[in-house]
Image (cartoon, rainbow, N blue to C red; front, side, top):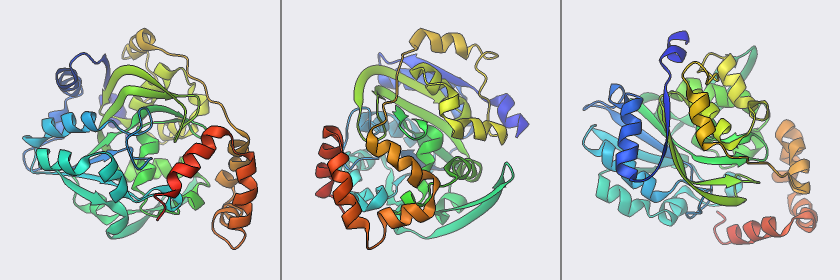
Length: 336
């Protein structure tokens, strides 16, 4: 693990020409060390909504550009995502809403709904705590290089949602919302097991105020590339102005030896200051109540998956703010 940390590198760029800037950033992190002519590459976007929303889901044009660069460098490219949490929408709907069928056809990539393929439960001890999580078997057995393509955004529960948090979408269970207890440890387990080798953070738009599903989208025209998820997320958090004390999953991954959080030695601290913004996190009443669900699986089950659920949600709807109502009403038409 120590050697992984020593080799970690990252680059942040302002986008003027997407293909050129992405290529230069990938070259900076020595992407060809991981992408070989006989490699199977898995690309994980952040499709946390059933159609493209600026600052909320991965920009399809970012994916088109990345897949185009990968196309002639490897044997096979797979793009995958799981169904939305709490049966909100299917990955297939998200693929359609992000024009992924056309993009994958043009770039020779395959599309896979991770919720429809065989899974396996993995288990390990992370910082003294035994945790387990389910992942698609394919990601463990068939992938040579995992490419993580998150969005630059804040998250009301985890502080930031970047490359490490994006791995939670590899849990194929649409009711993974019941498994948030010890999430920081489970994310570290996923990072250890899936080993993201390339991180391309979509900062064309970033999300301020309230993530992951709504907030204030800001045009930032940034791209972050790294060969280490902990470093990528530390840099992303610094750029957004979110202290890592609010992103405990990143700190825990660092403790587990999965990557560095110190930006000073590489000069990334000075680089990040050139682009630094002052994002913030606004928790609503519903968010504050949801903290209990994040930390208690029994309460989560009662609230989200029990005979009491319809009544609880009717009561909760009264407390929703206008943006929460808009999202809730919008997602009703996609529910699976």
